[in-house]
Image 1 (cartoon, rainbow, N blue to C red):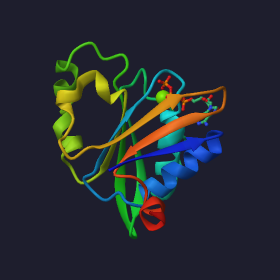
Image 2: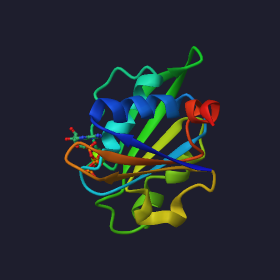
Image 3: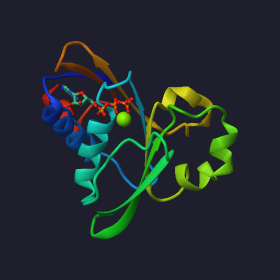
Image 4: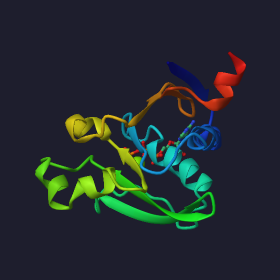
Length: 152
Ligand SMILES: Nc1ncnc2c1ncn2[C@@H]1O[C@H](COP(=O)(O)OP(=O)(O)OP(=O)(O)O)[C@@H](O)[C@H]1O
Ligand SMILES: [Mg+2]
């Protein structure tokens, strides 16, 4: 099941992300796709809110990976925030031991996940964001949102 949501501003995108993040649990990976400035980092901020991350969430474009400390159900959890935009080869992922993160007990969030689709875990949740206007974004969430399940 895929669900589409029209966001009319950054705050709405973060709110959809918060609702989506309520369905996440340890070991999950979120594959974010969509062009430059689509709102992948905004969406990540909403996820980080749900896991009580207090650090600033910014695109790890030059660092490849930002690690945030958060909590989930009262226990600490790590958020692994990747950006694969500048990656040239998949080897760079293996050099940092990507599978330790993707298959660990934290939550992985990957911007530009479509750059290396075959490096993604099969269980990744897919979220695509399309720019449809200056402040409008079409958010396509595989599996939908809990609120959507209750509505339909
Ligand atoms: N509805 C919206 N949802 C999300 N962002 C929006 C929206 N409307 C406007 N924006 C603006 O679009 C930009 C989204 O930036 P963001 O860094 O989240 O994009 P990104 O997809 O992570 O880009 P990049 O690929 O460069 O990392 C921000 O400047 C934000 O204010
Ligand atoms: Mg970004």
